[in-house]
Every structure is written in C-alpha cells, then in structure tokens.
Length: 106
Length: 220
Image (tube, rainbow over the protein chains, first blue to last red):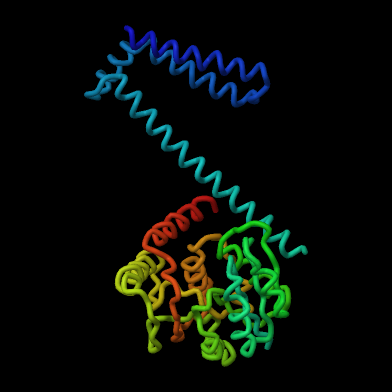
C-alpha cells in the first residue's frame, strides 16, 4: 500500500509537471498527448496493480504484475534508445551532406 | 589520362607537405581534403600548390574521401587514387597501382599488405584483426581479399562515379570494397608496402565498423 501511494505521488508529480510544461508552451500538442497517455497508463497500472497481477497469472506468467511492468518498461526503453540512435545517425548523415555541399561550393 | 590523388587529412600538418611532395611525380593533380583539422594542415597543403579544400567541421575519413572523390570527378579525373596523409603508404607504389587501370585490365585496384611486398604490420593486426576482418568480409559480403582493410586504392572514373560512399567513419573501407564488387567492377589487388609509424585502428575500432555498417543499413 505504501509503495502504491509513493508511486501515485511520483506519477502525480510528473503529470503536474507535464501540464505546467504545456501551459508554458515548452512542449507541443503531440508531445503532450504522448506523455499524457504514458502517465495515465502508469497511473492505471499503479491503481489496478492487483487486477493486473491476476491478469498476468491468468496469462500464465510466473512473475507478479510489477515484474512484468518492469520488463515491459526496459523493453520500451531499449526500443527508444534504438530509435534515437537511428535518428542521430540520420542527422549525422544530413550534417555530412551539408558539410560536403559547403566545402565544394567555396 | 588525368590521374588525381585524393588525400583526406586530419591534423597532419607535420606529414602533409612530405606526402604531397612524394606523390606529386606520379599524378597530374593532388586534392587534399582537410577534415576540419585543428592545426595548420590546410595552410600547409595549400602552400605546396595542391588543391586544398576544407571541411568546416570534422566528419571523419569516409566523409572526407566522399568530398575528395566528388571534387576529383568534377575536375574530370580519369583515375582517382585514395591515399593516406599519415606518410605510411609509399608513393612509389602508385605506378603499379594504376597500371591495371591504364591497361584496362581492371576497374578498381586495391593495395594489399599481404601479397609479395612486406609491411611492418603490428602482430596483433596481422594475426588477429586482419583474419577477423577477412572472415567478416567473407561471411557478410562473400568477398575474398588478402587485405580486407586497405585504404590505398585506385579507381577508374566510372567505378568512382558508381561508388557512393555513405559511411563517414572507418567503415567506409569495408563499404567501398563491398560496393566495388556489388557494382560488378573488375577488382584486383596489387602488393603495396605500408610503413607503420603508429598502431592505427584497434580491435575496438573493428567492432565500431560492424556497428556503423549495421546502422547505415538500417537508415538507408
């Protein structure tokens, strides 16, 4: 119960921060929506942790819901790092193209 | 036949003048690409009368070779030689490198450190890194070459036109070999001598090359 309350405080903090960023126009509408969905899902996962436990057991996993959530989060993070690496590689390629065009233009 | 030597250079102010002077008797034109050096490489190259251009930021050897090759093509080169600026390649090998192109026996010539001529290759490179690189070339590209990572090469105009170097980093070497074969060029190896003044690429660099090749595949 204590852990659930702690997790709810953390999620509430990030949700408040998200709305603050939106009001200050530090993030655009799409980004706001993406993070809102993410934190609402996190909120739902914390509130309905027992139901998720049952669902996980019903699906045949031996771990608890929190284990499964951690695994899924790690997978999501790895995927995000991979996507970021590709984005950076594309940007690097564009920088090199610009660099070459500038060099040959002189 | 216009023979152009492309020399990518990064922080090579100590070697570049000597390299240019060594190469000059064997070619019609020398293009130096200063890859955003922090020292006076660009000024030193320009002082020799060679064509010197400068990347405003450092983009690594593959990017410098791409710029240099494009400039050589724009300046109507018939044969393009890729040569390093660190004074490890021997300019006296150039006539043997371009001979098969002049005789129309090849479209691309790759220098090899593992044929008849001897190089003072570090042992780890000779017995660990190079066999591994040969194995990777064979495994991924089905290419058998005695030297899997030579930076000394001579290209006909057409093979240079067909060659689109996409890797900015050290992976350009494997990429060039792969594309030369993929473009159905007649590729031959010619013995060269390399005199090592420094160790150069380490085993970790090899893993970086594999990573770069995979990323390049994914973003294209």
